[in-house]
Image (tube, rainbow, N blue to C red; front, top):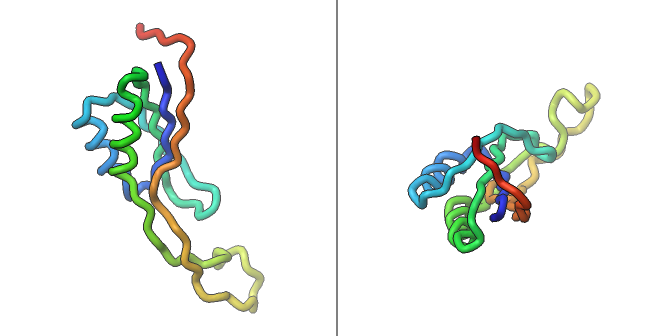
Length: 109
């Protein structure tokens, strides 16, 4: 058995959760926050049998796509008064960061 840990942008959460449920995968959803942009994410914990791992990863890949977004380099409250604020910078957001971990033992009570 494998544990798939997937961090997904908030904007993709509806699409990925619906796709996983349609494909028959059960998961636990945890709210999280990204470190760079400080935007909302969700972290999904998905237990899958090894034979279903590729299917699970395919569903994740099809549900979460990266996109460009413009962000300010410094949040307005972090800059000293009178500081020059640079133009917004284009960054990639969205997509999914996925870790696959071996499960030594699984119990359901």
